[in-house]
Image (cartoon, rainbow, N blue to C red; front, side, top):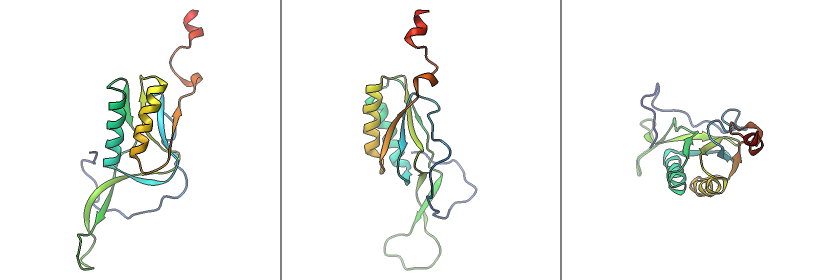
Length: 149
């Protein structure tokens, strides 16, 4: 599972997930992507489950990029512990995903395989998502008309 090697502070405030994502909204590496439609915390386990689902569904064809990193520590108190004595220890890590954020990307596979793989990965995430693609005019590939010239 993903985790930062070292951090400046061990614990963080919970924060709020207001508004929409302003960075990481577009596809940068692949041709197809999975975009969040709701705000949520995505745990490192959910990110890894989505990555495995895409890789296995594509049968090791193409390439997968993870566009999230779980850099926010979430703390919890042990069960049946009295109040007081400070904040609990870090239990797991999450990534804050606002609406519009690209979660996963893939390339080097057909649209049908990518759509099915992203559907399996979407099932592993706790939010509603949609499939996004790079427009044909933005791709680096050559169109059939250019190949005939």
